[in-house]
Structures are given as C-alpha cells and as structure tokens.
Image (cartoon, one colour):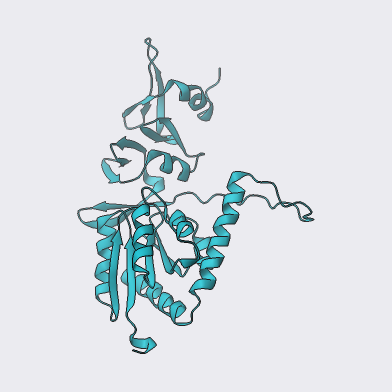
Length: 278
C-alpha cells in the first residue's frame, strides 16, 4: 500500500463526549482513516496511545487526571503526530504552532478541521513527527523551569527575558442542546460552582461547562474578575453594593439584584479591589 492510500490510525482523547463525537463524525468523512481508540481522561489517553501506537492523536488540552500537555510529556519521544484541541482561545497556541502538528480551538468548523488533518498527513508522510515531538518536549521542559522559578544557567551572559504578558480568556465554548457555542467573556456577569460544573451567568441566561473554578480563576483576567468565594467568581464592575450583616456574614449585591456570599478571608481584598476607603 503506497503513502497516498496508507490508513491513518487515530486516537481521540477528550473528556467531553460531544467533542469526541464531533471529531469522529468528521473523520468518518475521510478516506483511509481508522479510529483505533478513544480516551476520556489523561491517564487513559497515555494508556491508549502506548497500547495502540497510532499515527495521529487528537489531544484535548484540558482533561481530568492529566492535561493534554502532561500526556505529551508522559509519552515522551514516542508521541505520535498530535493535534491539540482546546476550548480556551489563545491557550498556549504559539507553543503549539511551532512544536505540534496543529491545534483546534473549539468550536471549530469543518474547513479548519480538514486543514489540520491535511497538515498532519503531510508531517507524517515527510517523517517530520519525531523532530516536532522533540521540539514540543523541549518547550514543555523549558516552561516547567520558568514556572518553578529556577535560576538561569550559570555563566549566561544574557539577562533573563521579562515574562510574557498572560493571554487571558476571551471566549468560552459551551455545549447547549447538542451544539457547541461561544460565550464572549466580556458578557459574563458572574460564575458559580454546581457540582462538577461551573455555571456562567450571562444576563438572564445560564450556561454550564465542565470546568473547575480554580482553572477558570487562573485563566480569567484578575483586573476584571475576582473570586469572592470558593463557589463564586464575579465581574468586579457588576458589583453594586457590599453587604455586611451583624452576624459577621458578608455578601455582594450585583447591579441586577443578585446577591452572592463572600468568604471572610476575601472580604478585605475585595474592598481594596473595588476602591473602598477605610
């Protein structure tokens, strides 16, 4: 069988069923493609990739157990051609651009998917995958050193570069009625926790996403959003009134009348953030 008709063996790793089905449906339209395994979390992804040895992996960045980047590090130099998938716009996309086959930002259209798949096929045919994998692993290791605060190598004449400005969320993908839609972050009034889900409150509408509050807090611009409670993040310019009850309970009232509890250990910082003078 020549290169043009070689069957491309694929693993899909994503914790969202709808996202896995979306990729599987698009691959079903392609010739000479076989889905050899699906994984619903990072640990399972490592196991499935090692066991099936695919040519290509669609790898979600945000997954339980291990993130997509942690999966890549765990597989190491045996990592096959990889297309990263993320619901967070601009999430490490520059890194993916130079060190991975491609990336897809949810929700992606058919044309963007086909473009990524064509790029993956070309990289596999040109045997560029191992070189790109080594570049990705090197990039991840360098990033770990930066995060850990390790000192620069001794003898280096160059000063350490200034840290790059963080790219915060601009849009969040949500599933509603079997479809993926995009919610602009600047329309979100507040976010509350509901079991394994976070609920985005946008005007009179609520959208549920399967994401941890800690992750959202980290990815939202702290100049705009503030976590007032373990189960609530609020847009600061939506706050109308600070409420302090005689029993020591704290809360905020938003401009739409919604009241949200504030943790005692966040109260002082909240006052400072919104400019309350003592």
